[in-house]
Length: 101
Image (tube, rainbow, N blue to C red; front, side):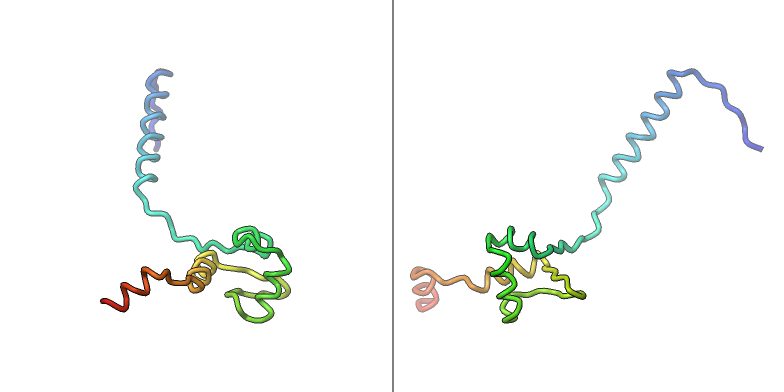
């Protein structure tokens, strides 16, 4: 059978505050679950600073990484970042370093 415990209001408040602090500190120590950031068409266009029609054109030519479910287009933020980096042009300094090294 459960016991009934009598306590003062102050003791009860302290107990609740301590439990809350403990729970918050435990939560802060937990690693977050990795979340895949999917963007819809409008979000991807805004992220890349391109028009929606430009994004449609790139997807129709398969020039940009995307996923399609039904009539909806989705974009992974990390894949868009990689796609942008693939278009990087080397500077003259970088080319000279490669030739020397």
